[in-house]
Image 1 (cartoon, one colour):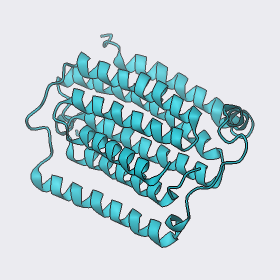
Image 2: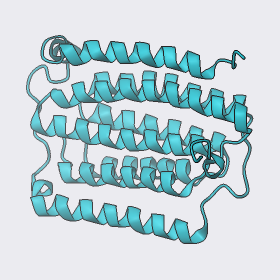
Image 3: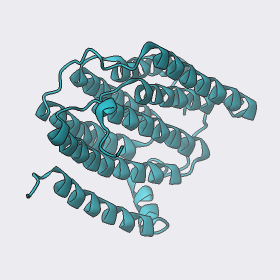
Image 4: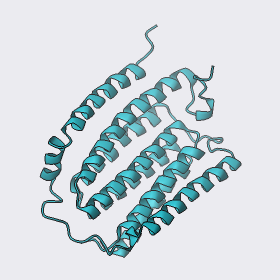
Length: 102
Length: 167
């Protein structure tokens, strides 16, 4: 039995999401930007689980399962891209990534 | 879960999340993220989502974060002096994030959902893995199969992208 109303969970979830978005905006290291994106995904997962609990529906938890799989695939591909860019450019600074500019 | 436990866990979680964004060195960022993911797993346990909590620790804190740490160490990333965005941009980003947060709080309040008194008791079998598995393999079977295809594509592309140039 949970005494805390769902509104608190929603606000905590959006707080985490804003922190993640802030990280994406203010950091230049692509790996940290990437970790901030993971944080945002987790904030959404958190809200999914809270709603699943509130509405007594397991579909929310199934959705979290899929989000986790997509996040794992995304992390693998994203880190591979970062490694291959680093090999060419010797940097992980997002401001110096101009491979697609010309 | 009573209010005190929620506030304590939420504070620790937010501190860890801020650590991810504000830590100067990438390794500290990654370790903060591991801590944040663990606190999220605790929240999942308290929300009667045992399977999700276990997956969170095994898949996220275990597999994905090890991958991150591995790449950080492989590339030998150090603290970088000019790593944060310019002050003006930082201010703008902070304003945007705060606006988003305020908007969410406003709409959560307006919808009246936060006035609900707690979450009530769970129905029978809500916290059982068997029920989730049943849904996964009946209602969401197609999405489940697509997920396996996605993982296969991800494996192949990660290998192709990260291997050395042939020519």
